[in-house]
Length: 313
Image (cartoon, rainbow, N blue to C red):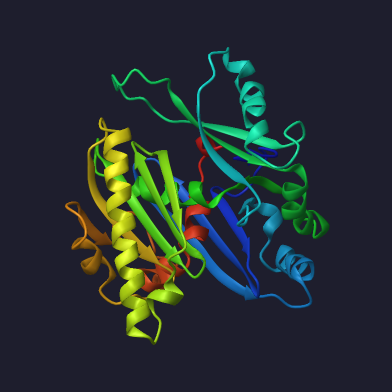
């Protein structure tokens, strides 16, 4: 999303994701005509602060020999859906920067901006082609990258969670069919629609896995009902806005086990609902513990960030 330089040594991408108490590394190598290989997945405790941990990992894990990427955090960026401006390609980003001035609270002149096209795919709706605009205040991008720079880790790119999720979803799509991907973690839910490997739409919500695994059965029941309603509303909304995209299934993933989640959500919708299993689309031989769906769900964003391709920028 926000690329910095293109030099690299080892093939693939190494995602370096700092959390409150740990740093996760995921290295994925893609190959034409075969499944991408997850070469590495490790988690390290943060000791003496993030920068000190990064310095230790830079040497111990040979980070300088990889193309490294990371993700922006919650509240550090905005993803906006706008109409594509009728201007030449080279002027588009600046035209969209101007369009953002009433949508964001930070100066757009210095904001970091990137643009994703929403494919029209022959739709005859008469609407202007849409774009997804990622914007972030320069200070937020600098704050995200500063610990890496202080530790001597050169980032090749910075992405956002929506694109990491898109990278996983594109592997699970049926040919010429849209995929709705519902990911839940302790912070909330993210629901994406992808089609032919492109991100089309995003919806977020407050329902989270802490609530869905609560000891209080009433809490679990209420949150599951809200989640099912949000899923159905999202599917109806997608059908109205993107009627040219036939959705074949909903894939569900969570950072912790939620009993019967896919089966319960299937009662709320006419579309097939499946639990995520990446074993058929990724090679886990170097990291066999990833054959466990619970481990896949816990590290979904790290894997998705490392599934970045040269075209993902």
